Image (cartoon, rainbow, N blue to C red; front, side, top):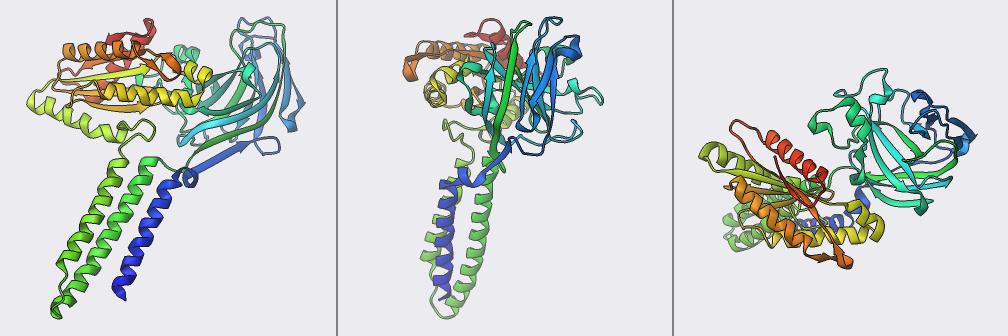
Length: 429
């Protein structure tokens, strides 16, 4: 009876695990909704703070309905609405586990685009009593595709160029951040001149994310299984000790059960290291290869190079052909690159449309040859919907006395240099 109860418990755990894996997206999903009637403080904003003369007014603040007339006193006139999560813009909400948002907004005016800012505070750059020092993470939406915008990924956000020029943050702070968002701002788009009237009404802004990272979810399942294995093994050892006394030792059964449980644990552990979209390694999966290559360079003198590449104009692919096509392009690029690198190289999706290749025991010249080969292959391949796709690649070899962080920063800077020089090229860090 006890044996049957233990096996039933294991069967239930298997069923529960399968259920969690199948419905993980639904179970982990969380939403934050902003719409008329939800108690958030709202204010109107414009270029008046920059010496402009734009006039803004509420049509109906309770319904989040406003309009503005752009003035001509400022070269880059704008107006918008700010939604505050607290009374102190330096104390925001952590949106780092959110992945995308859905927006429903009515707009009348001549603007071709609308800008959405998620303004993040960080003591490294945010100054008390200077609200503009909050990082302006922005995404620009096509006004002609409204009023509904679905699944706008956080990966599409970039930091506003004027903010980078004004505050000159450190290299590692140039990426968009969402761990302390104090306010969200919706504005008129870029390139407008004064004189036009613009009218907005926000119907719903829905932020969608997960309660914790998928890697942690898989790790939790692994730990539960390891705990179940230990408990089951303890139970079996106790049962077998009794069986020995009664001449009923069942060593074969124990070996089979242990093999089954160990295999399940290994499968779950391996899955936690893979990117669910492309099947390439994720950041967790590539970490071991980075550390191993660094140690071999440091203690054995083996050369160590890094390639970081980004799909050029990937936002345009999503906007023109849809996110499903964009996801298919990423998977096809992954398959192409994986088939054309050496067995000792390690390839991973770093995030969004950005990928990394760890080239251990490789001089920079050899890494550059590989980068050029991959760049040409991608440039000469037709991807989903017969799309021509190019990539920009940054390459660097670790220097004496350098850290992994320093190598990555130089490679990242080389990638940005390749993009700044016209894209579809390899730059050295």
